[in-house]
Length: 227
Image (cartoon, rainbow, N blue to C red):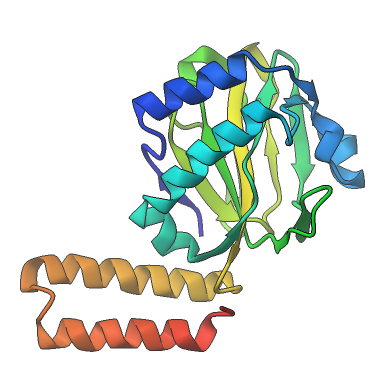
């Protein structure tokens, strides 16, 4: 399931985040790569323990906690601290799959990567190329969103970033361990949740059928959740 979440970062948060990143020192993007990714990746990355990365990452984590759409779609148990990358002209990330387990260096923090997320931090007119391309059974899906928007997709998906041919692409990326491991189960819960919300807007939260359907949702979540 791929979900676009518009306006994850508001204008003020986006401006603050950009100011932090524009003033920061960047390193080779392979600092956090596994063996396969190191062969495919050509970009730059903000050191994950830098003050700028921590402050900008906290802005994003706060925004995630305020997003009902993110919570409904991801059902998050753990979120890896957001990382930041930038692609200049000629830089790209060839087809790869994200590591199943992500560990934060120097700590005992680790997560199972059920979902991958990318938050776009500059406007798509600022650069040519640089599309995130996610593959599934229906083919390839190209993603290039407005500044502040986020795309959420299964971490098990093959994906790549096309070469930037003009300008510079700036994004945050991270992974989520969901309370519900199975993507199909998460999709079912998300569809049920959004349908309940849509019907309850017309019939009211105290409608008997809405109450029963809400019970079904929570009973399914209780059956499937790891937490």
